[in-house]
Image (cartoon, rainbow, N blue to C red; front, side):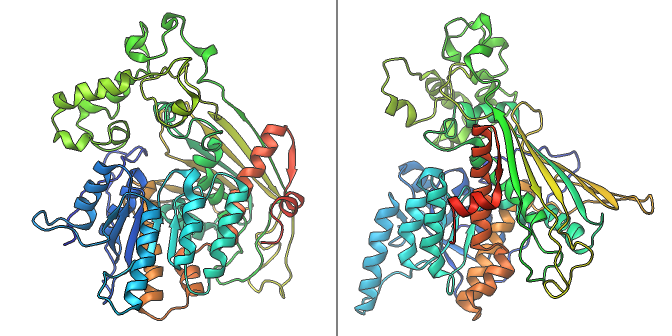
Length: 545
């Protein structure tokens, strides 16, 4: 018995919502006779987002979850899989470990082949575990011949990205594959791409300047105290936070001029990058804080904008006293819902968690294995960049009419460049904005509105795309719906997987690898203080995949 009328269970979206903004969730497609059955691996924030979006906006059903945390696992089953408290959930509804699921699934297929009456299997998997686990999970799932959607980033090293490619590429004739580059799927960005590439609203693109303002306390939560604070345990922040920003830039600037064109992509010529950890380090620590390493024992805590009590307890942001039980509170207190909305009952547990700290004698493995949300942001062990710029350049490479029937002039393949800027210290939180300059006009886009200035006519035109949800401007719903629709078309409507990949996923395996490789090339440029020649770097590091 699957639950209905699921409320917004996912993490609170960080984009600022203008007053009067109307959020209109998309209508789910009609159910097929045998709806796609979905496996969720990882019941954390992203796993819950995809669970909610599956129920609200897709024609699939969630059949199974893998999650080691017993509270998260049981709550996920109750919320997204089986709401009948009087009867146990069906066999195979939940597993503590993804390896346990794989073993069970192999045995289930053996039992089915022997003629035994067994539960129905799953068709597709959402991989929502920690970034450094993606490679092992996807590679292990590949022999099961499932459709797979892997949360971004694909993996934390270039070698692991290529390893995933080689594991899933043989499945492409019959299965679709997607990665969590959700920005491609928001109504705002889909319209922006149409205006640029199909309508040629500003002529040929000359320059893009794209900014991701992470938000001062959001960066401190995730990249100073949280999961993604150290390159050695996860990856650079350009990969963990901004790989889909790099992807959206390549999506706009590498693509052919027309959606039906089969012309080769316009490949960049070089990439450079600068950036560092500028602010969240000991040299910036206020003198009033003294030797304190934890907010609860710090004399400067009452006036500190990064105080863990201010962020997680007070009403200032999205803390306990606001009644918020979603992100970030569900990360700090995974069982926050068990308190039933009783703030005073939850407060002691929260303060106990915030008071936890480590010392010079704490084993490094213990420090690395968990988050420390009460730790002073100037005394943490974080080392990822809190500001970074990336510049990508393209040389002019026009195609002839024989090479691209839709091309004219340089055919969107003129010399151009893109500059990406990730910055932690902002009021805006993940509310991206972009300036695009063309030969006949310019565009300003801010995740809500697209404004075109036409140099030829002097006219200004503004577009306000439908806002389907606050999750990446509707991108969370969009990617979930499109992935499951692709699975449905293959399972129930006789489509070949390559057609479903092209029409619903809209992204090839090579594109996925290219955008991730660009991040690794940019990091090599930043660390080495050099520019990277893209084609020679690709040939050396990736080669023929």
